[in-house]
Amino acid sequence: MDELDLKFREITACQAAEDLVVTHEESMETAIPEYCPDLARIVDTEGRIRIREKALSDGKLTISGSIRVSVLYTSEESPGLRSLSLTLPFSCKVDDKRDCGMIAVDSRLLLLEVKMLGSRKLYIRALPEFRAHGWRKVRKQICSGADGSEGLQVLRQQALLPLMTDVWERECSIAQEVPDQNGTDDAPDLLMDQVFLRVNSCQQFGSKLVIKGDASLSMLCRGDTLESKQITLPFSQIIDGEDLPEDGIFCCMPQVMEYEVHPVRTENGSGFGVTIRMGLLIQTYQQYPVEYVSDLYSTRNEIQTRRENVSLPTSQQPEELRRDTAQRLEGAGAFVYLTDADCTQGELATTDGDHPVLRTTVHMKILYLDESGTPVIAERSAEVSGELGQIPTAFRTSVEPETWQRVGSGYEVRVPVTFRLQHTGEDDLTAVVSAQVIGKIDRTATPSLILRRKGAGETLWDLAKQCRTEEQAILDANGLTQAGDISDQLLLIPKVR
Image 1 (cartoon, rainbow, N blue to C red):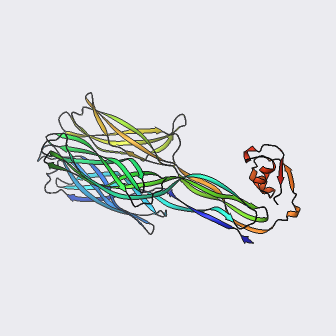
Image 2 (tube, rainbow, N blue to C red; image 1 turned 60 degrees about the vertical axis):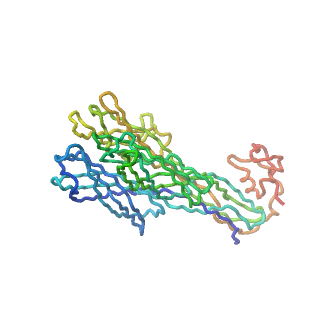
Image 3 (tube, rainbow, N blue to C red; image 1 turned 60 degrees about the horizontal axis):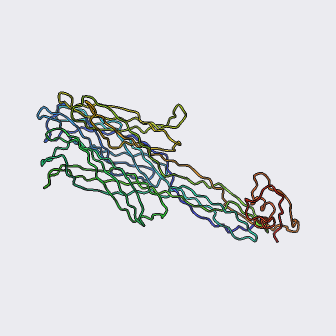
């Protein structure tokens, strides 16, 4: 038996692996720096996780970095609210057998506990949760052509597949000095801060990718009075050196790796110096055209053909669903500041009308001054939901920078939530994987003309293959121009000479 000369094309796609979720506990006792006054009362604490390294080796994933712990407190030695910043390092290792070539890690704090051990010492315990997203390269061979037999007939099919063709990371930094529009010549003390990143556009220009977005900075400051300040810094990054497809769609997810904010004094007054190091996770999506051989036969030779389903992981460009929650805070005086806001991973549910819906719970801590001027923390929780058109295969939830406004005798604090929806699946293409010539056809036993009708579900290809002739020969013999012209009429099916 002679093997036919089959030509194969390789298709490469990225497939998302199941998330790996791990929790890790760290604790320490630490002395308060000498420059800080004694602690009388802890008002609030918040922690920011900074992942400095993630490494995958020999089936082990190592995640290391630090938690920057900010402590708001009062002291009997000096009036007003004060802050203390401490660093809690962490490193954890977990088994990862997912065989991923690319890893991205999200994190959140499940628990942050800070206790006073006297007026000059603190005990800190933190429980961070890490969610490791992974992608593996899937490479499949599919038959794209065939040769090597007299009278060979080849059925070629076309498909347009939505694929994630690449996923990669880049690091970049921004540094900027921002004037304090409402400030004085003296820079205020910075008690607490947080940074949110958002990408607004990710566009290709030739071999370069231009990413534009905003860094939103929220600050708690102390001058003559307590103030909450919000600053938005636009940023742009040009990424070069990657092999970018011309028809690609690019999605970028930013992540704060490290940042520093400090008061500055300039000739024009006070302001803030901001330095942010960020990671950019970039995914490439394409509508990928595939032409493949789904069947073949010969009008001259008997061919033994084997066909199999070739499964390819498909992935649509992510969607975003944005909702928000509003909380009223009465009797808050002239000042509020959101010290922390986070949301749960979320869950899929259905409404009374059986429509799919995503739900998450937002937890927030709001600092305000009561009627006596004492700093107080109000803890609030609210459920946020969004109705879906179709059920996603995966999703992520995150909070965006808050806004607040004066309403009557209090404040309304509004926290936006973003659901990032991913739709993935698999497409099966039935293609030829091997074909062998097993002998000659005895054409003397084949009638020169056959009369028959097309059966239910039969195609022109099916007729031609059964009768060992060619599709075009059937069309020509019946005065037809295309396969769609065939109805239930009696067809002349000639033998190919």
